[in-house]
Amino acid sequence: RRMPVTVTVTGAAGSIGYASVFRIAAGAMLGHDQPVGLRLLELPQAIPGAVGTAMELDDGAFPLLTSVDVLDDPRKAFDGASFGLLIGARPRTKGMERADLLAANSDIFAAQGSVINDVAADDIRVIVVGNPANTNAAVAAAHAPEVPADRFTALTRLDHNRAIAQLARRTGASVTEISRVTVWGNHSATQYPDIFHARVGDRSGSDIAADRDWLVDDFIPTVARRGTAIIEARGSSSAASAANATIDHVHDWVLGTRPDDWTSVALPSPGVYGIPEGLVCSFPVRSVDGGWQIVEGLDINDFSRARIDASVAELQSEREAVRTP
Ligand code: NAX
Image (cartoon, rainbow, N blue to C red):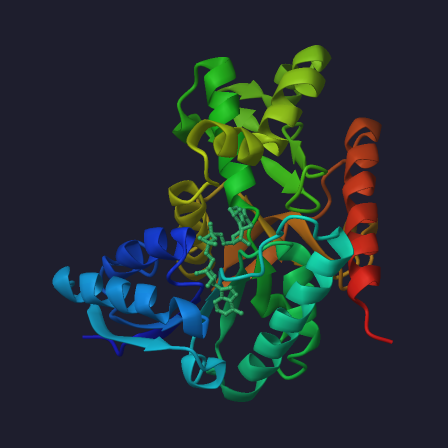
């Protein structure tokens, strides 16, 4: 039997946390032969909720689950952690300006980044789900100088999965026939779901993208505004689909992407595709030997370039807003 790995989930009493931890315990994230110890980190006022979740985890009698700890101290929660799922964040409340939201989250993710730097395991991998996810990940990475920057990622897999689902719906293909979709940029309304390099069965994505009216007026806005549509429909934001995407992201990071396919992950730019170094931007990536490799050399047409640049400009303005002098 393998040694258990420690997985720390922040915001564990929240909706996405609740929808994630049972599947992690069941082996969906790290494989059905990998035991896990879960650490649930919450704010003090939400500890009772996390205790209830821990009780339910006990009641699952999951063979792979070796321990569950409920904690409100980040230093204890990240001690020896190999995975950090940073889901908890400060939500935007009424009357709050975007700058205030960025600042409040910057404080949270700066603190968590420096704790991760100090106490996490050497193989720590971080995924930020809490919004603004890209910039929160950039802040955390900046406060963890001893951790390689590419271990800090942000979730755009939900957007990627949404794009695949919309493409399947449009073409009648099954999701398994669709590959090489890319989400570029920020996890926000400026994100750019790119199908020009995609394959749908034996059709090329650029063939499908030739219907520009559909691409511009339907596909791109449907994917980019799906979160809002979910809120309107169910009265609360995506939870199970966000948890599912988080699990997909970590699963592929550890266990690899499908041959001939790639996925989308936001990670610090190494300066490729004209995206400034250090900005946490979503790219097409493959997982190779447990690390992300950006798919380089794709031909970016003018249509795509303009949309990537717009999302990157937004990321730059977020980064400027949280930069400490
Ligand atoms: P909830 O409000 O249900 O849960 C958030 C939980 O985080 C709360 O229990 C809160 O007590 C906790 N928390 C807040 N600050 C914390 C801190 N400093 N340390 C530990 N715990 C803390 O939100 P939920 O619906 O679960 O969403 C969580 C985050 O995911 C939000 O920021 C949301 O905007 C973001 N999302 C990101 C998505 C993505 O694709 N990147 C999609 C879904 C979601 O909107």
